[in-house]
Amino acid sequence: MRSFYLIACLLISLLTNAQTNREPLFTSFDGTKIHYDVIGEGKPVVLLHGFITNGESWKRAPVWQALADAGFRVVTLDLRGNGRSDKPHSAEAYRDDAELKDVMALMKHLGLTNYDVVGYSRGAILTAKLLTLDKQVRRAVMGGMSADFTAPDWYRRKNFFEALTRPGSHPELQGAIDYANRTGADTVVLARLQEFQPTATRAELGKIKVPLLVVNGDQDRDNGDPQSLVDAVPGSRLVVVPGNHGAAMSTPEFAKAVVEFLRN
Image: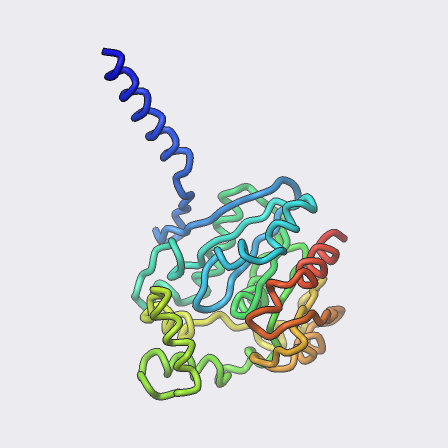
């Protein structure tokens, strides 16, 4: 009898822990489930990850904990098609700024208003468009990006789309495609993300009123000259930190620049 009691208690404990540790999923506007995490208390900030990655990339960078320690409530998410979020394949699932609708719906679901945004690489492109859509954004940081993405035929977007849909068409990108396959990323989704990538025009960038910080690695020109982005957004400024495109986000200098800017 005692053994049965102990086993029952153990099962209850395991079930309770499983429910407590259940990964939070938010059902977005079209039924797509989005995985997200929240740490810290205080002013809200959402972090938008780059291409061929997910929200976990922020947890490996000092800025994630640094923001929480500085009194921010930090929201990370796996943008649709990535990580532990749903991965629909249809074109309709990615049209019309669907990723940004997810972000805005998630922040509303969490009851977070007047929030900050930090986007890196492709996440910076999403940040730019979000600034044109949501008046709740207070301040923004765009990392690893120039203003080149504003061109409808930007070669980086076109080349990645072609590399994903026509194998062997861009040997220079094969390393990235191989990495995507090794990490289990959905290459059909990755192609959709390039095909329907949200884009803010230069005219829209020129109308941005919220304070914007551009942060770039001193060895990073993967997405062009970051000064062109500063020139496009009135009142924005540039901070250069050590590292190439893959490393700059993970430096203490990046964390310091972001925290100091968002504290104001």
